[in-house]
Image (cartoon, rainbow, N blue to C red; front, top):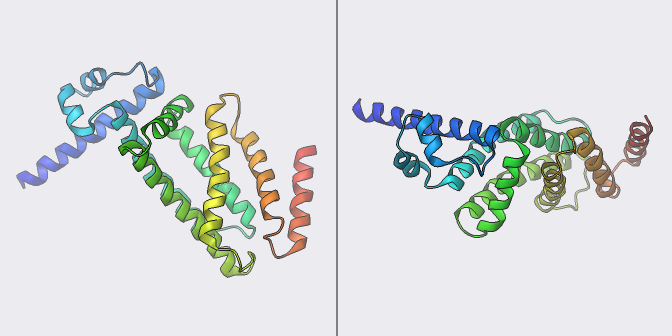
Amino acid sequence: MATGLRQRQKNDRSKRILEIARKRFQTQGYDAVTIDSIAAEASLSAVTVYNYYGSKPGLLLALVKESDVRLIAQLQSLIDDLPDDIRDAVARFGHIMRCHALKYLTKPTWRQVLAASIIDGNANFGRTYVALDEVLIRLMSELAAIYQTRGSLISTIDPNIFGSTLFGMQNMRFFQFITDDALDDAQVDTLFRCDLEVIFTAKIKDPDLQLAAVRDHNQRRNA
């Protein structure tokens, strides 16, 4: 009983620290926030916060991991109920990622995440961030494999390689979205759908679908 109570208390403290950190990063900016200020609001010592997360980048990484748990659940729901056209599915995948990202953290905070993942390289932050991305790549590969099973994607494509390629394209637009405060989701969606038209030209088995997609895109662009 006592052990279970201590664990619940530890989990509650951990959640409280993360939520305070997230809100402060959102409102004050990552650089302005200190471990001491987070600890004070949580009614804990700074040593306790360090014991849980090690550093401010450690807090940032924990927020990304928590965010990805929720994101993966949303993407899995998409995979469980895919639209007829794979291009719509991949575009929705990107849309879900972008909407979730801004719901959870601001663009400036995500820029700190991206910078830390690059600077940290093969150390803990970099490795963990790459591992989280690998989960998302597997989901995209699963998506591609389903359309291959349906017969709407040519069978000669390796779904794992193709999924990695699609995720890389999506990630490129995600980085663009995060680094430009003036760029909104609708604008990035248009750019990403243009990317998809290029890559799927020779991959979709039904040429009528290709022509229809081009017409739809042209109509949206001229609207």
